[in-house]
Image 1 (cartoon, rainbow, N blue to C red):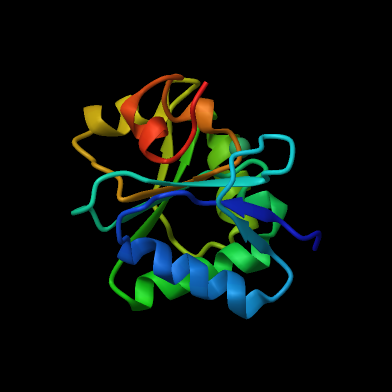
Image 2: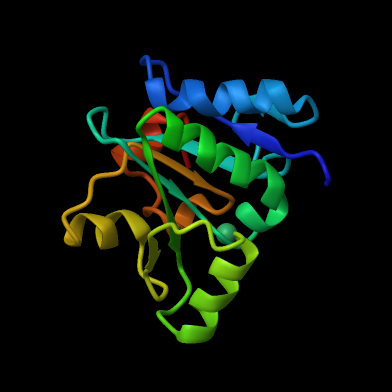
Length: 156
Ligand SMILES: [Mg+2]
């Protein structure tokens, strides 16, 4: 699988990130950078609620960019008592869910389909705070200029 460049720029300690950082190091061919450069970055890693155990992972061009890596990552989070979930902009349709579960070899993971709605607001509406977001498309999580993005080094 092609190498992926992960972006992470949070200055506060984040235990959820450590799991990902270890997985990236063990993988050996993915890269981690802290400078915002949207032309280089494949995957954005955004720290959100410091008390949440939820890791929200996007599907298209995130998991699908390296399924084996993400299967390992999901397992790594679970063994450390984090709860990885899928959060996708796709609509809640059977064929979407089938494709997602099939690609993940039916590991049994909660899938949230926002149907194009901004992910952070959607999840909060479900009563779910997210600890860490992993996504190739950060505008799908929250709009520009918000504190979450600023805190993660993304300024527009
Ligand atoms: Mg995506």
